[in-house]
Image (cartoon, rainbow, N blue to C red; front, side, top):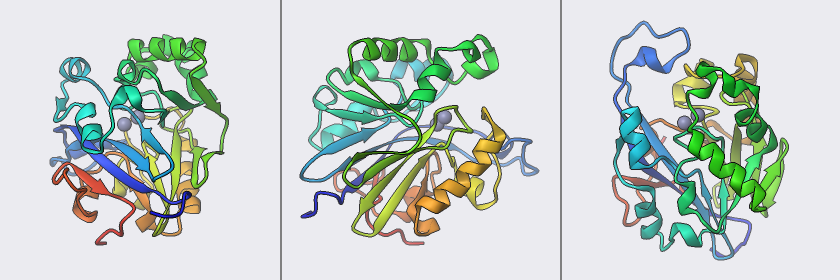
Length: 265
Ligand SMILES: [Zn+2]
Ligand SMILES: [Zn+2]
């Protein structure tokens, strides 16, 4: 790749969990049929720089929360010739346990996080069990230590973090949730993360069962559509269907795809 503002994007599956449709929608769903959830992280890179987007959960958290850890996060990075302690920049879309674990492995990284997410996870909202549930205390404490070590770069709303890469706060699902817009050879690709868990949520304007502010969640879909040239440039954060649409990444057949290449549909 010649241009330093265009990137390859890898989406790597590291975990999964069985569940039925009603669990994945606010106010449920009339069809009580299987709708498994999958867990992913992303790598954005070109010859000039690389970013890891989200850091997954580890085996201990998976066991405690009844999730299946398919491959520990370092395995995917290894295929791409990376090791966690050599990663220089991590973008955290939000602080939920399935996006912000394993931070102890990324010992040298600078973390890109929305300021609102940090105040959310260290403020009065965490006194409420329902709001605290998707967060791991250890992930939050580790991030506080990163703040004190000068290793967190806070963003407030929209921010360009490198040529061709920007973050945009949507809120809704979590107070400081941000999506990531990445310039590629096929145009800008928007990694929705949990601003759209499945294609169905954004296509039908429905809400995932976990949220902090329903208005911001729904407004988030408008922002995603504004940031992307088409629906084929928006990638949901937990939908197994992504793997049916995108070509496999070399060395990660079955568990990694390339989002910078065009989808089949
Ligand atoms: Zn989440
Ligand atoms: Zn999530």
